[in-house]
Image (cartoon, rainbow, N blue to C red; front, top):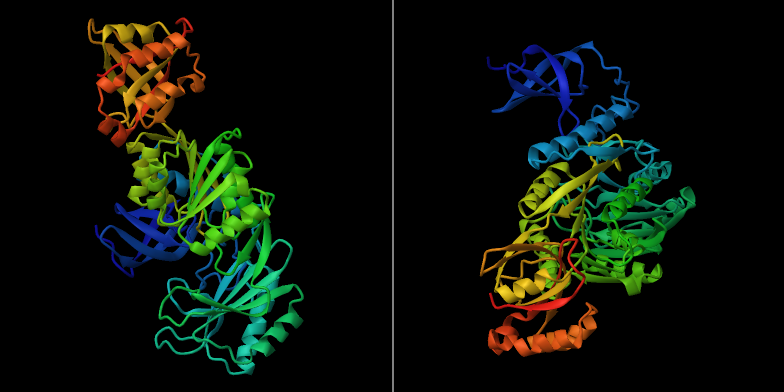
Length: 575
């Protein structure tokens, strides 16, 4: 039976959608019920019927959930900022955990559970950055699913000082007849009010304007200084483009400094207006602590941090690793990352590269960088397929994925699974209480691959008789997919006997002659007799100089099963 718009139906709400909306099923069709809580029996009025789902609001509430509460914000029904103020925080965390698990299972095809969700200690005033749109209706936030501005004197998600700044700017605009920007016509001046605060209580104020000058700017600065003693600077951002992008490309400091400092995980970061920084500092520390634990660093690893921003994760990882290479597409962010590393005494352990993540990941692969851990913290759209492919080719034993969108996380984990990576652990961290957003950190491990090689009887027996063996090969397309930790199954071409060995290391050189000379330095227990045997066999008879120059060569260091005599030999084979 088809649902009819405007008609009322009885329903039981059994779960939540990704935006926190209650989900019911009526006559086999999914119905999204605004403001409903899982477990409630309701009467719903159908607002719209689509091809596969319908949307409704509550007409009557028969069995309210014990988790239901009266919203503590007078603007909750109209403002689009919060989605969970009608339920307890405990129920909100349950809904968010369900959302992540659903995405991992339904979109990722994974059975990995979300072992924990880390809720916030403080669900009020946690935002360290806000951006208020301005209009003739006031300065506040957009009405849900519209660009109509609601004048909101105070929001529970922001510090009280932000409300003071907002009121000062609103009074200044009214007193000096400063027109707000109008999206439809492209006219008007003030587009947004941007405020950034830190744990010390300092405030950086920025006005985004549709012009290159701000009339009565001195009066604004003086009014802000009087009302906000903790103000450190006032900045003008010029954005004359007809776009929904908030910040413009040009900045002018009207007074004070154009940055403030914040401490995160023991490091100090300098934040300019366009700098990306997580909006909930205490919960970000929880998130990064989980990422570090998932990375299992011992101090000897090379870590590649894609989408590194100003280096927040990079510096956190650098405290526990030998080297961190950060990659970011925004030039100013890279410069900030380098300066942050220098300021925190970690310049010698970090390297920052500016460019597209997929292209620079490919560059690192071509440089022969073999990371032990790759960390990704992409924007909401997730990872491009070529980034996933390149990470898989780099073959780090571990990948730590920090995600701000469960849907794209599930999609990307499915791609990783197809390339040999298994998601082992997942935890959620709530950086955005009372809103639908949720962060997730996932640990992926590379599943060792199997490779097959044929050997003549003599080299086969040489491997079989020793624990540690270096097998010399051309580093051509056939061998380049061999990674540390993989298994090589050798077959004796004479009698078909098979032998398994684990790849302990890969020693790459330009030619076999270079490899021979390096054997004593590899510290694999080589004797002069072993090295003499290697040179006498002369792999140059198998592979031309041109082939060696084109591909290079590799010494594959192997470990056999227990119970074999501990003796290191060199195996030479063409096949």
